Length: 419
Image 1 (cartoon, rainbow, N blue to C red):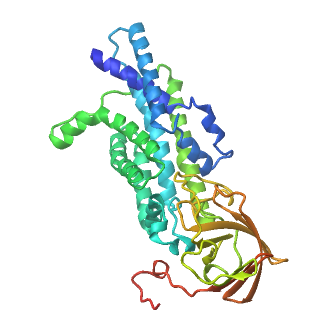
Image 2: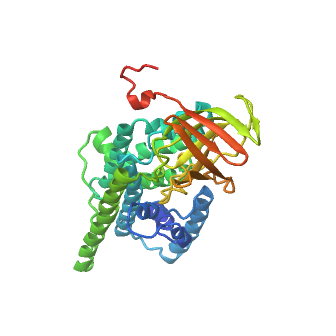
Image 3: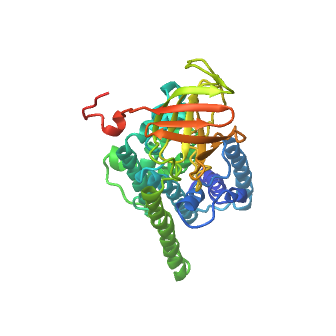
């Protein structure tokens, strides 16, 4: 290495070590206990901070460390072995992050098929991020393909021979994710750029050989640098650590993610809703405090329609002004009360989780929007026939009629459809 190359190496070595190793222990307070894809997902998504200001602080620390390192060690060292192990650290860090998201797409959970409420929400009432999510979710096979690409790229990083290929795939794939987050106002643009920076650093090492082989079509020698082990047991330690990584971040993560996909995908609640009630309902009658309100496009009190999901969620569309839940980061919640994918990014519907007291025919409703935690309703219900639900309490009386609505996305867009 030349003089300036040694200085650059010292800076990037310190910078990426600070970016990669878990010095921010508060982060792990968010990591759920146990061994499964939820725990491993949050471990794999570690960053020392969630904004670019943190990157600047780490760069300043790395620069100060570089100055001290350069003054203390001014010999003409090559740092080849240290550079090798830095790339190993970054390869496995990047692999963990990419595989974690890849398997959530391979077993299509991250971007699920739209719920009935979403299918009955006007296009303009979604946030840009939510439009992107449900537009991808309507094609599960495409989502699985994207997950396959992402997972394959992560697996290629586990071998130094194929790591440049994996890093190249990640640069293009995650680069698109980064741009999508910017364009659709997603919340993962900092993290996606973090992964891109690691992939870029990895591929720079092989860039000259890649250009020589592919662009110039010249005979190109492989990377001559191999790891040096001072003790034989260190080689076995390396093999053991690699095996543990594959066991947890590929084996355990993959098996538990697939099991969740088959039994209870994490984006929607799993508690069953009112039996045989799933569908959209027209509000035929709406009476509040003894006053019947006729249908109106502008009335902020009267409900326009109501949706019962297959799970225990009821959504109400009205002209009421409220602060929508703009959550736009990937979270894996274990309990139904926290799962907010169905309500986040929707500006025209109020979503209520409910508990059904089957003996007393009472629904206990809780607004799922984090801004309205105090919004609770207790409604008695009657079902005069299979298509009618009556909801009422001391001040409210609502008669709902189920619409026989057909959804081309569910039936199949290329099959005959009669409306």
